[in-house]
Length: 344
Image: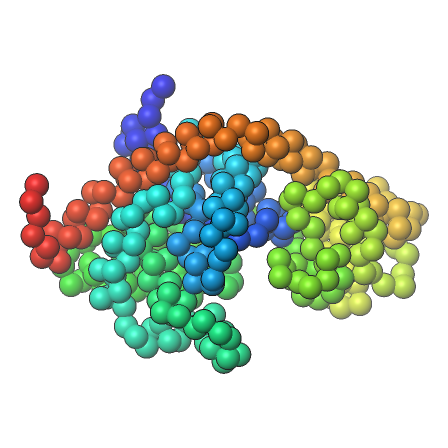
């Protein structure tokens, strides 16, 4: 079998870097807006995907739970379709070079830049406990995650654009101080996907942290639970299954139609025709069934992988080795340029 390193050398495809924290099961919005696209990108890009466990500890974690969730997240990404033979799939802490580069890059990151990061400002303004250095400086670690692989593209949502811009600034600053070293990453805009909103408050995005258990649908929710959540979804007093983007009162039914189209591949027009003359109750049940059908094979494969610990651990080890091999040259170049004395 041709190694992933040989493939990368031969085809010169653009490299995409994606990461996900292991602290929560992805919900429907995460799946449609992020991980499903990572799977699709394997056809056209060299993909580097990692479990961001170093980032996770900016919030205090229960060690045993974090270890379990890391393995579960790795298995879930595989179950979703990220192929460890086609992508470099690894756990962040298994490649110590991320943390090493982060220290060097911290010396090229301005204090004011980090203090202006929106997420840090929001948390500090709320007076949250454990406002630690890691929480303040993690955008520099995020820059190291990206730059150490010379990623060309990074899939970003609206809440991450600021962090990617910082990574670009750090790369340019380092390149100007020495010589071209890092690829300056560009944001990757994925194909249009419906913005998935809360089932209980359809004017706000679906969230992992929503206190209402019926607001979010998770990839590992049981079939009956998924369908029940959709049957309870908030709509309005109407009955027609039609999409009206300019009508705020239709946010609920618009959200459900967007979800149905996203998981079935149907168009809005086809969906309206399919459900003409049928009521909201019928439609909500159909959306729930369609989502449950989408998640069923993922859940089945996840269960199989979780029962084969040796295979998942072997994939993790192989992924770490590939990540280390990919990043070693970049870190060595950085160390040489900043003046560290090498011993061969």
